[in-house]
Image: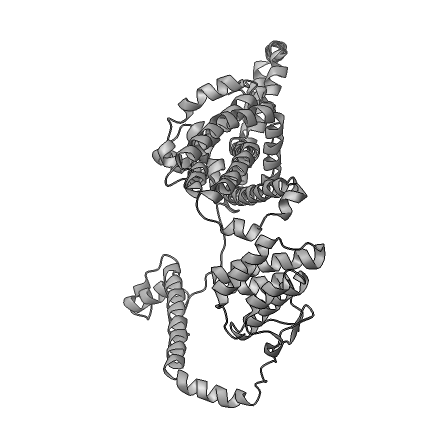
Length: 509
C-alpha cells in the first residue's frame, strides 16, 4: 500500500466529513459499483423469488440477510480504486467468489445484526484479522468512531425505507386514472392466496433495486470512516509530509555532508574539546530540570480529591501508614475503606433500585387487593360528575337514520326502487347500513364523520363480511354522489343479495 498513490487527500477528518468523502468516492465509481452489485445480487434475488414464490416475505428476508456477502464486492472495488488500480466490472465480479472464503459464516450469523458492520468489514476483508487479533484491533478502532458507525447504519435503514416507499409511490403515480378508479385498494391489501402474490413480489423487486443504488454508498461511507480512523491512529498525513521532505532533501544531502566536513576540518582540536564539554554540562542540567518539571505535571502526576467516610476524631493518616496504627480497629478501618470503593457504590445503587421496585410493587399489590373498595369509593365521588351519554345522531350526510323512517325489509324496498328511482334505492341501502351501525353495532358515529371515517370505525369491528359490504356500498354511494355514476344492474342485484345475507331478509330495522 503506497499512500502517495492515493486518489484522495490523506488528512484527519471529522466523522461526518469522512462519511461525506465516502459518498463522493461512491459517486466517482457509481457505474462500476452499481453494475457489479446488480450482477451479483439480482440473480440471487431472482432465484430466491422463484424458489419461494408462495412465500414472498421469506424470499425478501433471505435476500436482506445476505447483504453482508454482497457488501464485500463494493469494498474490494473501492480499496483497489483508492490506489489507482480500479478493476473492470468483469474482473470485480469474477473475483467476488474468492472474497466469500474469509469469515463469511461469522458475517451471516452472530455479526449480521452489528450496527458497525460497514466500519469493521475492512478489518476482516482487507487486514485479514481473526480471533484475538481482530478483537484487539476493533477495540482500538471503535474507541472514537463506534457511534458514527452505528448512526450510519441507522440512517441507512431509514434511507432504504424512504427509497422503498418512494419507488412504490412512483409506481402508483404511473397507473392510469381509468384503471385506478376501478381498483378496490382495501380488498387488494387484504386479498390472500395467489392473487395477491404479484403485489408482494413487486414490492420485493423495488427493494432489490433500491439496494443497487444505496448499498454501495453505505459500504463506501463505512470504508471512509475506517480510512479516517487509520489516518488518525497511524499518522498517515505526517508520514506523507516526511516522505515529501525526504525526497526534497535527498538531492542536497551530499552537499550538506561535504560542507559539514569542511567546517569540522577547519576547527581547532582545543576549541572542539571546549565546545564539547560546556554545552554537554549545560544540556544535562537543563534536561534534568525539564524532566523534573514534566514529572510534576499530568499525566505523570495527577492531583485528585478523594471523599471518604471517617469518624470526627480521626486524623488523616499518611498513605503508607498502616491502618492498624490508628485508634480504630483494623477490621473497622477496612470496612470504612470498602465503603469508599466503586464496588460499594454500584451495590448501593442496586439496593436503591431494588427498594424502589419493592415500594412500587407493594403499592400496586395494595391497590389490587383493595380494588373493589377503591372502585366503590371512586364511583361515589365521580358519580355526580358523570355526564349523560351523548344522543345518537339522527342524520348523517343529510340522510335520515331514525328507525321509523326505514321500511322493515330494506332489500325488497330497494329492489322495487331500482328500475325507476335508482338514486333513492342506493340511498335507502346506505341509510339502512348507517342505521344498523348505530343501533345494532353501537358504532360511535358523529354528525361530522366522513365516509372514510365511517369505514375506519367499521374496520375496528373486525367483521370481514360487514367491512367488505360497507366498503362496496360506500364506493357506489360516492360514485353516485360525486361522480353521478349509477351502479350496474349486476351490482344493484349484488348489493341487495349481500344485504339479505348479512342482515337477514325481513328482519326489523
